[in-house]
Image (cartoon, rainbow, N blue to C red; front, side, top):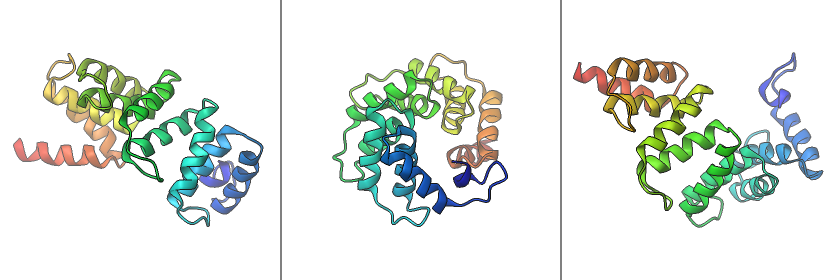
Length: 191
């Protein structure tokens, strides 16, 4: 991870990250499997983009309770990627496992499915708002942006509060969250 991110005085070196993640994955280390899956999915570190290999690695990690593996495997199921049939119910199951561990991405993704009533879930904006808040409190950009949406429109039991919505959108937009950037652009046109 330090090589992948270029931290701790190390130069960013994704190829070395791949080598080390592979060593860890070969020993059954869930974190190594999940991180190697990310690099396979995106085709980084000298690896060819391989969504099927990413799914295989995410499944190995998820089966050991690794939240990153659970979330990423959930995304693959939700979108029908990596040779998987689209399965929103399985995505819900995996996101819930990760969310229950306090994983912010799992919380935000599960919130989206609650808000829209997908994956066999009844539409539940209150639960979505609760999950977005949990994710936002950890700095998750989707959680921040989608919580802003809840405030903008007064959804999920939250009061309609345009100032809070703009504050949240700006926070996420400054960090590159495109959905929040579009929301701010949309709002500027109506002011």
